[in-house]
Image 1 (tube, rainbow, N blue to C red):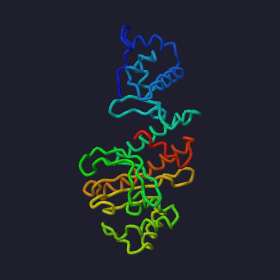
Image 2: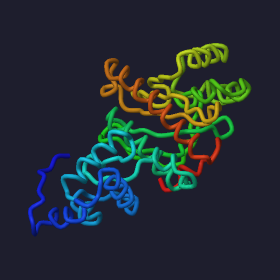
Image 3: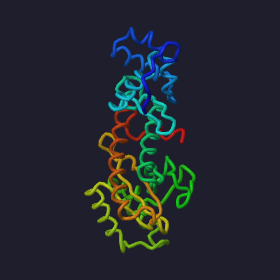
Image 4: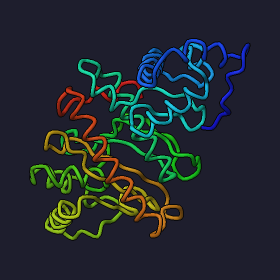
Length: 282
């Protein structure tokens, strides 16, 4: 975001400068934050200057500094800025289910943009994996939108394997024995093979599946730890021809780091582990 420093008399910035010149930098920062807080969906730079009464160039410098500190977030398309979830969580009493929902959306949107593929969050429902929230990637080919929520075989999915890796082994066994003989065929000859893979997932901290749930589909998932419990798993998935070996390593880094970010946000929300309310609104 770049803008000229225009404070000429008669301009919108000039009008703002009259009041802005009477304020110190700290006061201007407070005014900017307070103004942005009144626009949950975000506010553009010109409107921010007009509403705050501070010169546009000064608003730009303050907003840029606040964004660098993680207090504001800027939409890359509209350039509107709004309060970050981190700032809301630092302010007692403002971490609502609505703000957590928005925070989850931010995380998944970042994953989808970074990987170029659809991203989502799953949890276990019995011995099946339930997709509870999903954000589509930029590609329409290779990953058509599907119903949410939906139930999937847990041991065949990357998220399901992540969740099973920290679950009671009897749950994993029940899932495996239910449909191991159904197509697509699996490389696991027995439940012991699956148990060994779950142990490997716990050790490396993520799961990768290829053509396990759907032929030609690659998926990456990582555990979302909330107060020490693996209640959710974050994933991204796409066709083999896009998620090549080279891109797969990058996707693993994105998913594991964003899963940690999501877990931290959910912990700091104060809503507690196991709360699926953050999926509302998707």
